[in-house]
Image (cartoon, rainbow, N blue to C red; front, side, top):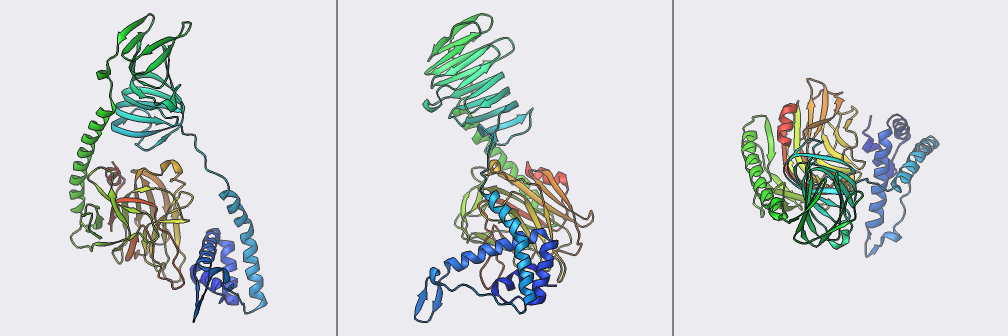
Length: 501
């Protein structure tokens, strides 16, 4: 039995035999995912023929003048088989094109832009996360929230903030400070004792069970209380509003400022970087660790030093150095079809764990590469993100055997773009399963159908070289990578969770 890629290549080259056409027809009926692969090859073939000039002795024929490829088939049976293939694909293609015209939507109204020592009572939220209407309960730490209308709010734990819209929120407990530019004029904060309407200013709010206080640092706000006329507060004024309102002097020092969050963020970043260095040294002591790129190389370097004692260094091609998870932490940015890191993974492993920190900018391709063995076949592995946001580990079968794709549910939605994410995948032959993790949490389990050793061998981070003669599939990553490690053993969930902290 031929590999699916070989059958498709023969079809595109017009060399498909009657027997091969029948095999392709049967496999399209039995393997729905093969239809997706065939579509990808159609797109690539069309792109290459549309952009690559045809060289002829003495002149160059431009793409528009290129002759169309003619497909010849050995028998009428082959023609019928290929017609059936195309018929089977018709409905699927139509559905794909219709779905591509539907725009993604989001319910988010704000974004958590920064955080220092965050500890949540509600679901944990990482900086960079878009926020939909709902209740935020911060146990401790400082969180900076930017509303889509333009207002910027800093809350100090313990605090409770209910997001209502891009221009309104309700604070039922805790302290916050707000910076409201002219574009966000009319921004509203509700409290149990009344509502503050901002007229383009800076103010602080302290809400407790007994009373609420609003302090105006700049500009003017309106205070609206039930059954009372509106009160205007200007710069330097403050008011405690409970059963009886009391005019006070504004006190900016009792509220977290942007300067304070800058200072605390810098201290927190240094602390986390020091902790990571210590954990990284401990990681390198594991004899099962075969590759570890910590991306702390000199920014003039065009190679990644393998931190393990016996492994080879990786070679950087195209990718550019940038800042990683914290200031002082290095990372590589992958943008173009050329960007990649070439490396030498173990030639054969019985068990496997891979982990990396990555920040995805977008899913530009149908397949977006994380770690890809060179070529495909004979137990090679491909770790990638599919365009719909699923994370996939593909394992080629031994020669003549089918491959296996192990997918998660959709994980990378547009709301997750631009955020640092820890990814890990485990191939566990003893448990006979493949496990995917994100940020230390188990995403998916899949039964491992073939227990033969894997053969990662020569591979690439962020791209793929499949060594085909007539063009290479484009699977480059659009994003940034901060760290990568590979073990020839199964890591426990506790070990993966510790790395993701």
